[in-house]
Length: 237
Image (cartoon, rainbow, N blue to C red):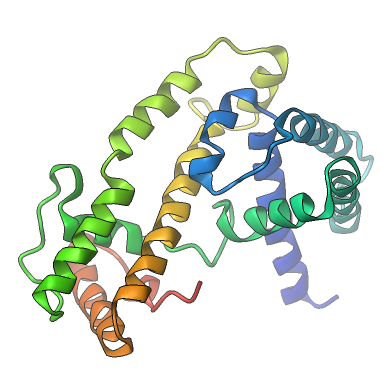
């Protein structure tokens, strides 16, 4: 396996391990739908996540190959105790939507779209994309529909963080530095999932040329918000 391939596999493993930490915490379950995770067997998945983490901790040598084997075994277990479609959905969710180490995430776009729509008191940009006024108003409504409750979601996540912690919860929270919360991943994953839903609606509304104009506008606005223009390429979801 060449170095680039090994780096890609490590990136996937980081996403899996962060996702399974979330899946192992009962306090994260109310947020699953907003995170784009739609499963009915949450208690079963939680126990598989527990076993996944425990197996990683028990490895005598935590090599890439050993960790990959644990990941694959856990995915097979999900398929065995639920069904193949649940395992495929979970795998897709971890690879594509969970944020840890994910190079395909759209870190700049959610910020700029919320700015464009004036979500939660943000200043509406004076420079607008050159898109038909009616369509621009429709885009604004789409963005607000998806993101207007972001402060309420943040409050609910903070409240979930403050719930009494079991010994297992304490172990997961102790994996990071002081002040670390695994629910930070919940927050970023919700943002990514909502962006994907938003962008799908925008693509259905705009022509190819109008999408290109929106991308051009976003790249032009990037320096104002200390964003790198390369973070604002056209999303291909």
